[in-house]
Image (cartoon, rainbow, N blue to C red; front, top):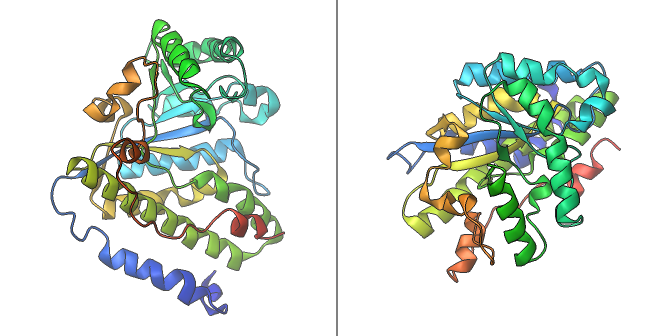
Amino acid sequence: MGSTGRKSGFWTRWVAPLAVVAMTAGVGHAAAPVKIALTFDDLPAHAPLPPGVTRIEVAGRLLAAFHDARTGPVYGFVNGVQEEREPDSVGVLSLWRAAGHPLANHTWSHMSLNSNSLSDWEADLVRNEPLLERHMAGQDWRWVRYPYLNEGETPEKHAAARKALKAKGYRVASVTMSFGDYAWNEPYARCMAKGDAAAVAVLEASYLKAAQDSLDFERALSAKLYGRDIPYVLLMHAGAFDARMAPRLLKLYRDNGVIFVGLAEAERDRFYAADFKTQATAVPTTLEEAMKAKGLPLPPQAPAWGGAELDKMCR
């Protein structure tokens, strides 16, 4: 990949901006450490794999990065159906647990609450429970992450789902930081299949820039709303590109003054109080929603690189 910097426009568009990010990381943030709880969705299998890469290898690389960065417990949110769809993914959950990290519920089939009945969605949630009980062996697995972050398309359904989850002893794992990491995994598999090292370098640079931009943006919202950093809950996915980038991504966060905490510790902050209640009307569970609820305009956000650009990579 050493030759990729000679590609026309690559250095000026990606490498140079990232060099500036690296030099300025942490500037102005010398006070209290920034706390982030890492969470990974779609275990044991997310997105296509590059040639020759296995689900076990993806999990192993993620877990090694957690160990090296001393992240503490990282919840993996499970869709049990993937073990049926991809038998080669069997073993990922055991590996996750053997490394000391917990598992929780993402529904059996990644079912959207917005496009299904609450009763069907509950049944899909419950179908996942025996798998979680077996792997967690009496430890706390009663956290839920809504697939697609869909919490019900009406206030009434939102409240009914929260009531049902509370009755089952669940806590909701909200998301207060995300940079759409999932969008890089499929183009990475295509680019590796084509052996396009230059394109992979573009993916790497754009991924790190997106992470930095997201961190800066959410911190700006938290400062505007509360004059402090809330503990953030970061949504990630257990994909092959995420595994490749994990050491560099975690270093980026640490260079910005981040310390990693567990999900339960992060959600003890008063910002997440709504995750333990039921309301007839939706209560803000993201910083963007909190800004809108207070009638505050969102600040300018760095232009996102993804979507159409990623979809075109290595076609």
